[in-house]
Image (cartoon, rainbow, N blue to C red; front, top):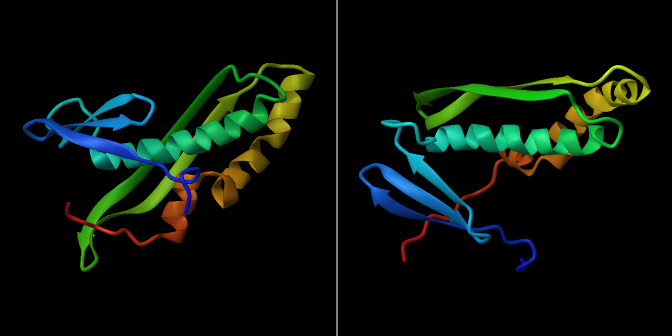
Length: 140
């Protein structure tokens, strides 16, 4: 693989049950264990799926019209079974409203296909969840 394909972030402990994720551009995101308002790792996974899909769909539809409202809900059930802890029954719901008129009609027309394309091939987060991938756990 190459530097061009590499994605990376660093996570540092900032308190009891609290961490800080920092991306290569300097963005900072607090991560917690659920005892406060910080996002938990599972919530971040859900946010990543929602965000990835939303960005894909928005990029496609806004070429026709800017949305008046754009909301995404993603949910799933966290279970523990013989396979360990994991999420099941993931579902993503997109509610988008476009303005009246020809441009809005064109955006409404491409919306179902944009959602389908995101799920089938565009959203890296969703595709990774659907396809699965090995994770190498290492100690430095």
